[in-house]
Amino acid sequence: MRSSNFCFAWELSGSSTIEGRRRGTSDLDCFSKLEGLIEDGGANLVAESRALLAQIKGKSHELAEAVDEFLLDMMTLEFLLEAEREAFHSSARRLARMRLTMVKLLSN
Image (cartoon, rainbow, N blue to C red; front, side, top):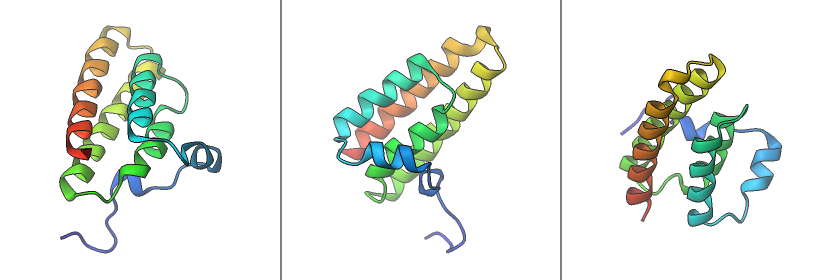
């Protein structure tokens, strides 16, 4: 059981444009968009990921933990992309894809 002042990473609110974009997105569509974010990167990588994953929140505690781990990997990837640490990009992407697979499995 978690305390009332603790929140998972996906519970943090995203920007209003991202919030509006994710309404009506299916889980399958959500995961394909997340896979695209992993491959393409981008300036709002973590915020977009958080907004897309917010629609599957609350299904289970294990899923919430998997989402948090995935978001941590996305934060790492975003940092490496911004820092232009190209030697680590493929490893960070591979790890993010593995974490996303875990989120997919737990969301079913």
